[in-house]
Image 1 (cartoon, helix red, strand yellow):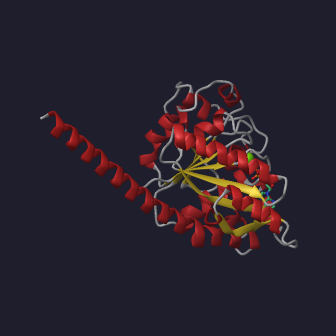
Image 2 (cartoon, rainbow, N blue to C red):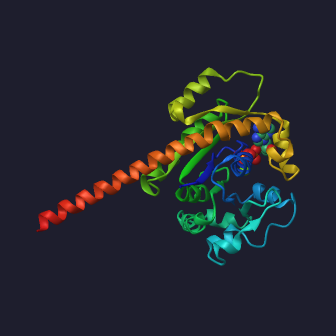
Image 3 (cartoon, helix red, strand yellow):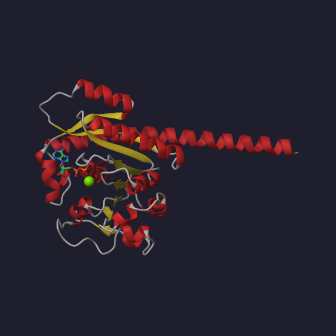
Length: 286
Ligand SMILES: Nc1ncnc2c1ncn2[C@@H]1O[C@H](COP(=O)(O)OP(=O)(O)O)[C@@H](O)[C@H]1O
Ligand SMILES: [Mg+2]
């Protein structure tokens, strides 16, 4: 199974961190893949790290993904437990991660993830609000890109850039990267989805790539991280919890299973083509 998901969008406040954390909590509850979930916080601001460790303004963790990326410690030594759930582990962020953003190194996280993947059912990578080296590392390491976006006219041009980066990385560095989908977040529940915004979104992402569930603005979703809980633990009966639950159970898991099947078929076909080409070459040498 390929279960490494990078949550991306360079627009700040588009629901990346909120979705990464609630997705992890939902997968622990609703996915058949039983082993635990790792969150990798690639954002130097460390919002996911703060809430998952239960301290909103404490010192950043002494050991972080930065130490792992600069090879000062092993990936396993960077991992810590969280206050959210014993099955949700964290490779925390640290502000020093910013210094890596100034380099050209985009494949370092991939090596870390490949070492950790056998130990986790799911790995979710939260990314900073830019399309720089840290987000690129996440996309090179991931099997799937999950884009979160508010549904406003202003958000559409950013989506175009996200799409271009995903396509570039798929072409050059990570052939097997697939778009899991686009999740619309933070919508004001009272206003209808603007038809022209939707139309523009459909020019950037295929209609089938945009999830039907919309995570509307919900105060409980905002309150939960300050209480160091996922939306399911904070108030499992609230609208925010039922939206995230519906999305995970009815769309996310089904789409993941479908794309996994496609990935397997494509890999088998690629292997068969390679074998045929090698056989042909050997024949012509004889
Ligand atoms: N559906 C929602 N309803 C209400 N507040 C939300 C919702 N999703 C996210 N938020 C809040 O919006 C802010 C930005 O979300 P966040 O997930 O941190 O975005 P990003 O990681 O893309 O910068 C946070 O304060 C978060 O609690
Ligand atoms: Mg964030």
